[in-house]
Length: 95
Image 1 (cartoon, rainbow, N blue to C red):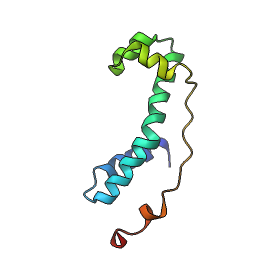
Image 2: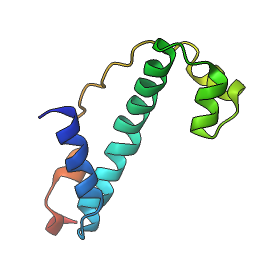
Image 3: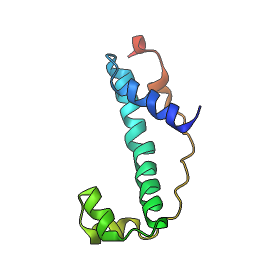
Image 4: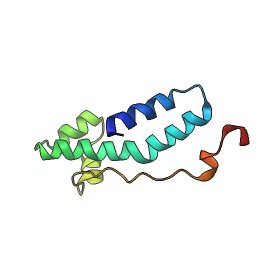
C-alpha cells in the first residue's frame, strides 16, 4: 500500500467506533507516522532553503527549539513497519 493510502486508512481507523481499532491506529500514528512526517516536511523546507525562523513560525514553535530539534535532520526515511504486539492483534473478544 502506498504511504498516502496507509495514512488515510489509519485516520479512518482512528475515527472508528471500535475503541480497540481506534487506539491501535492512534498509537501507530503517534509513535511511527507523525514523527516521520514531521521530519519529512522540515527536511523539505530546509532543502528549499527555508530558514529556521519561518519553519518555527509555521509550526508555531520557537525558532531555536525547531533548529535544535531538526538541525541534524536529513531527508527523512519512512520508518520500517513494526509488527504489533500479540495482545493488540488478538481478537477483541479475547480482551
